Image 1 (cartoon, rainbow, N blue to C red):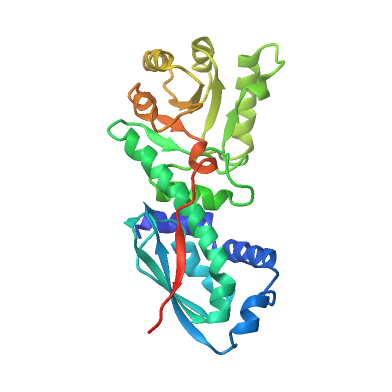
Image 2: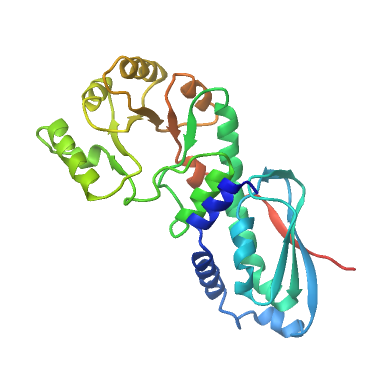
Length: 295
């Protein structure tokens, strides 16, 4: 696994939080003593070995945090055969060994987490590949699964995308609802930006615009990024021209209904970023199964 992804995994998904997630999942299933099926047919001391298999083609995500926290399920050992970020087809990505009772307790949680994360990574890679050849990065949004924000954003990174702000705390993004009803939005915005920058260290300050006129006004502000919401291709091209000849040159981010079919054309306009909510809220799961090995 590349060092950057490993560091990101441990930053976004520290072991304590991953274990807490697994425990919540176990509790949803009835708790550590709740597996009536397995307890009725498998003796305590029976050991087994199982393969975690990808059925189909996709990008791996979730193995690194799983490997650090698999002991949450009991005395289990996992051996990884692929790394997060790898693209595989019909492959065994890991082996799981230990008490069969513990393996079966862990099975659905492990497959749910991996299938979900790998699905996001796989869709992200498709967008990244579609936009390739342009100096434009693919970003996610805050349209993430409730309670799984950091897993979703880590999965985006595994697919080659760039996580946007993690939450409301680490970057300022002024959208239309923040400006609704203001008499002088530009003046109020500049005051707000000064307050936000003094309040804390921010990754960036961004403001959303809906028109080229609003873009011109935003270019007078102390912003790092301007979000171009639902702009047409022609409007995006004009926006890039306006930005390139302005005194301030913030990054331009296109957003709104971007698809695999349109992302390349959008990237070709010269925008610096595309923000795509579908990376996380529209990704189908990757089919992953757990299969017993009989030796």
